[in-house]
Image (cartoon, rainbow, N blue to C red; front, side):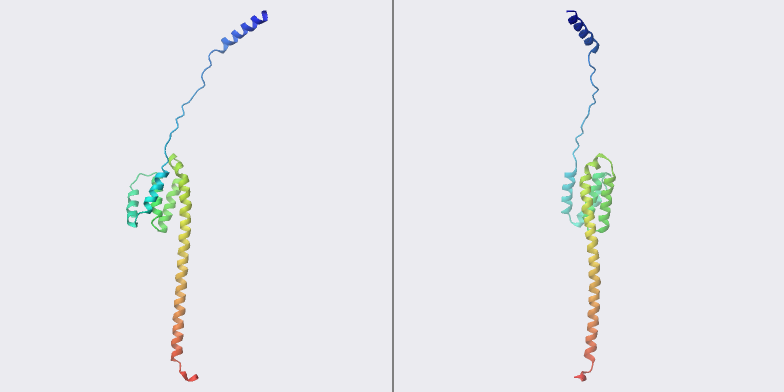
Length: 167
């Protein structure tokens, strides 16, 4: 019986020592749900593709009045890429690399789209360079053909002026 009383008293003493547990420190984590404007930018690209060159020029002027930011850089790059000018395509790539270097939350959300566009614009530049080389080679080949035709005509004229006495 003594043992039972000692156990009961010991349990009461231990229970008194424990007391109420302090609550674990909690911090409130608030998830900010900001929508990515990738869908908006893709829709914008579809609109750009439907524009005439004159409309595209006006749109570029309008974009240049927008406040600076990653989304604006992507818009500008999309518009520049459609002008069919190698210099503008290089500018478009530079705009996209600016977004890639940006560490803001907005830029981070746009990076998958930007990486896709960088690859696409890089391919476009390679194709344009290849087409230009082919065009230069074609012009050179046409020039040589024209020279050979001129020589052939000159030889035919010489042959016509020769006396026919050798027959």
